[in-house]
Image (cartoon, rainbow over all chains, first blue to last red; front, top):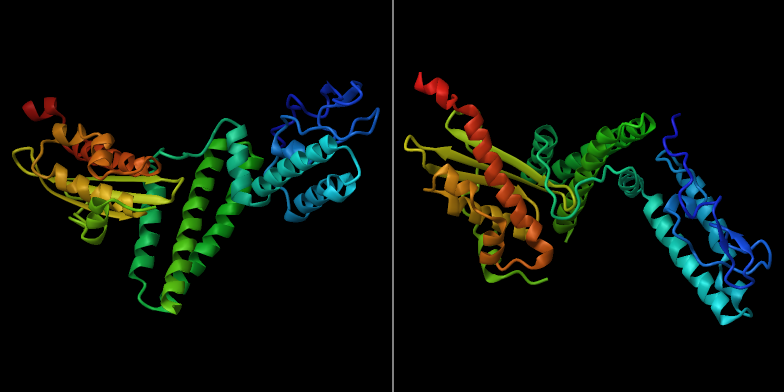
Length: 211
Length: 133
């Protein structure tokens, strides 16, 4: 599998910064100073580096979970209860940035969105519109089918179809990332976002009916 | 978030909902989307012999502001020339509907939909030079 991102970002494992406590050198993304063992504040590294993960789309949930929980244990408040308040505060801020990294990377679509941002091919954000006729015609058709669904079974059928499409779109997204084809990855990610919205709308419709 | 009375009015009584024959030569179709919020908007124009927009229809799946923006857009462009319609700015729509800053993108969607419909109509017409021959 191609790994398009191999460069180490500034602030990554190979950069050195002084330890705030002993002034000795500390590795850029290490949680603790090698010299005095005191906790280090979170740096500017990206979410992948924060969890010690390779910058790629193809990561399974278990790998991300293990990386996250191992790092969260290191900064657990109990371990800093008898340390200086500043160390406890630094542990807390590391915990916050680990959470942000985990939330971003755990969900495949958010991970894809983040990767596309890092790669300089961000998907259209707030206030940005797209005019991809094929994709939008498909979205329009699915939304119309949902709007016209007049029984719980019909709504469920649209939802099941959307779920099925999401699985294949996610596979296509993974293949596009593996090939380093960012424009294609962006298109698949945009489609996934629309399919997600469709699923949400279907759930809302079912809930309305149930109420 | 509270919608303005005008947004609620357009949302509850949308004007010109429907579809025109997109393969007809006198119909222009604009299809645009805002992926960030999952909105999709279709706006169509039917242009009369005098070059005026004689009918406009829309279909929007999205929030109340997106529906109101497209509903208002179809009202505004009826009876206008293509140039006049294409010159409508999203800020005018946003201002008329008193859209809050977080919903400005809905009016952008409507402006882009009008422009796309006009462009689609124009692409269907024979070139001016060819027509003159």
